Amino acid sequence: MTAKSAAPTALDSLIATLTPEPLEDNLFRGPRSSEGWQRVYGGLVLGQSLASAALTVDPSRPIHSLHGYFLLAGDPEREIIYDVERIRDGGSFTTRRVRAVQHGRAIFSMSASFHKAEEGYDHQSTMPDVPPPDKLPSAQELMRGVLDHLPENMRKYWNREHPIDVRIVDASRYASRKPQTPAQSIWLRANGTLPDSPHLHQAILTYASDFTLLDTALIAHGKVLFDSDIQLASLDHAMWFHRPFRADDWLLYVQDSPSASGARGYCRGSIFDRQGHLVASTVQEGLMRPRETAFQIK
Image 1 (cartoon, helix red, strand yellow):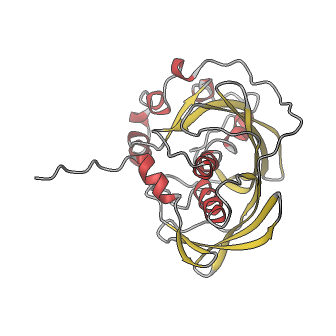
Image 2 (tube, helix red, strand yellow):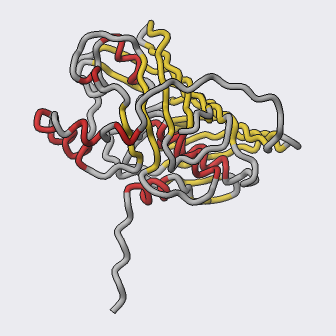
């Protein structure tokens, strides 16, 4: 008898989802996600776009920046086609442009730049002093106290295994709807061990960077992500990678929202490793529109 192979973990499924299938030169197909969202999660499109662009770049040349625009809501029942344009292959920098397509229409566009490793000047901001991740409950543990009061679709979401382990530094905003300073920090890491591929680690972090960034702007208004009277949608997302890191070790994601106006919220983030190195930075603007009903997880 042959032993049964172990069922794939949530992280295995995420890695498979972030591994686009080559269809033709510079053309790739991104697998569908099983996360159960009513529209495609923005971090998935970001991660698959980066992974598709990286397949056309020397593996020894990591990405240093990406700038993306969300154009249309993605259909979670359909795979996404990624058309990569090779803008430039230089001695130090490689530039790619990616167009994500569903139903014959572009739903996302991104420019990405890759840079060979070089030595140079070095300085950074200081990581804030926060409790370490092993002293904080997981997101699932935090939610257990309120699961009975949530809709069934949300209970199913929080009860399932997730590919990214998240630890919220200060969860007080969920206990009170009082407006607070729009800032938050979370620890995050892949829920398992990843292969030694810098491009994969960058794609995993890109995927996770969209989790809570726009949600930060809601803190100033006493709102949370799943409120039924607000509509949220990422409009654009930019990211800079400063130093090497591993996405399967804890990373601190420090976020704030300097402004919200005109039905848009502006948010930014700094990502540190456990040693205090600033490894990446993010900026995002998103739609924040009051309404009677809102998108939910199914």
